[in-house]
Image 1 (cartoon, rainbow, N blue to C red):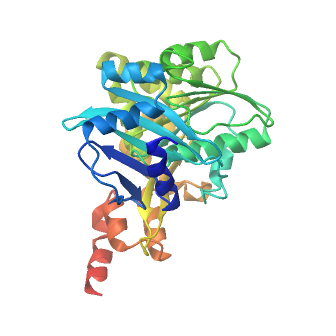
Image 2: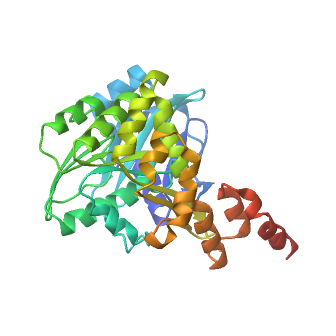
Length: 356
């Protein structure tokens, strides 16, 4: 058994999410958002090299030695899959492995907003799932794709780096392509997907201008495109996409985004009151008749008003959802304050909590 499997079994046993390996330090795992060291001696750079090489495919290892960075997926059979990132730092080689459950949880099991089923039924357009690293974007997207797979007969192409959740074919045909193994880059795979008669395309991450442009093009051509971005709310998501492009291209991108954007689902994970778990909070923007002109005219701040005025349709701001979780006793005032956008709304709650 590879040495790293010992650490990964400990990670699973403690209900953790990530294994952190850094030369000269003992292994650490993240449990409910907090890092804790395993009872293992510090790992030397030479020993770390042996540990990492043991599970890396030869071609991936050669790439890592040359480029000092590498991403791939690793699986312990019948246990779990892991998203792996190798990197080099001041102390030597290191890695972070994130657990990917073998079971794809449903929308109900994840307690996601029911309106996401409506989003899954869209025929075309761009749907963005956003949030910081480790906020559960991939898990949410997997649940949405699984819902489509269970209920509709569609041709779905996913482009990921690496493939995380492996979807069995149910009602739909799902073709999963991994950057590096099945295609050279997101852009090349997206161009190929346009000619493969897809109904739905999932882009693991819109990392650069080319990927964003091609994703918008696919959405404007009548496909339903799911993608992720590392932004915390709907207005920042729209700004991020537009600001990625040179100034002379931005009017055209605003027009394309206004035409194709159908939903933004922003997600954060909060520590529960008891400190023994985490719970997701969401901001949801759905298509509204005022949204296209708001984007075209650059009045991005008005998106907040659109969400607040349409709560009956299932839209909600992150701050309102944080307030709901606080009032239900599921998160603390401190946690709500730290995650809030308008922190002044939560200051009275913070003061009340400190007074207790």
